[in-house]
Image 1: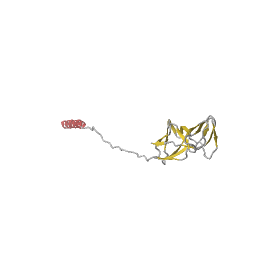
Image 2 (image 1 turned 180 degrees about the vertical axis):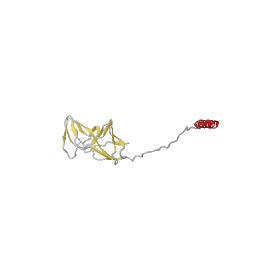
Image 3 (image 1 turned 135 degrees about the horizontal axis):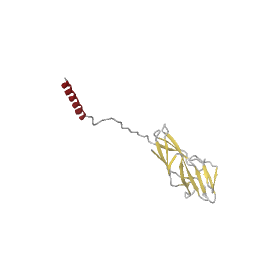
Image 4 (image 1 turned 60 degrees about the vertical axis):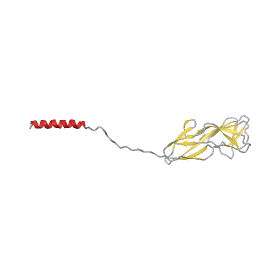
Length: 179
């Protein structure tokens, strides 16, 4: 019986060794592939950038509208009340809720032109600013609210020439938003 037990033990040990020779060498697991399709961004221009009533003197100067609607000036111009209330440009937009986006505003100056004069009188708008988080020159960031909406304002500086010709000056500028 003792020989039988030893033979049985030897067979079992060999079976264990042989079984180890067929040990698991691969494994398979499942995972998921996902994508989030973002809704298109729709940008809407609201209130225009309005510098308000300005009276230049013989030296000229700058009028600044901040992105929070504040109006300041340098010497050379006097700010007066007019039928146009000074305000920053306002924009609203829709997109995918809780997703970040980038705003691009002009870094180069652009001109506004006297629409009631000869068309040759211009003033330059420079130093544009935005009410959202500054990234670098011309770029700001924000995140859509949970409902997929947001809004921001844009201000700038107007250079008024010495003895600038009276009239109503108008021009356009572009603002771009992207995910």
